[in-house]
Image (cartoon, rainbow, N blue to C red):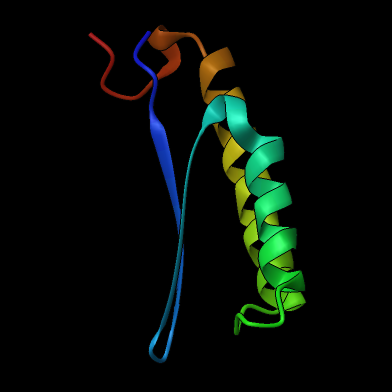
Length: 78
């Protein structure tokens, strides 16, 4: 199976925060979100980290559910 990349982005005013990660790197991206929030030189807040962490976890759950759904149950399956 091909390895896919996930893109997580936050754009606020002139600030752009983009995190790229694969499905095997969930712990790493969650750690990076925390590190970014703790960095006083960034305008990335703990609230931002919490919201994006929630999005990462939700996307991982959706992927897990999709992988468990048999193809014949998908809409438009041939």
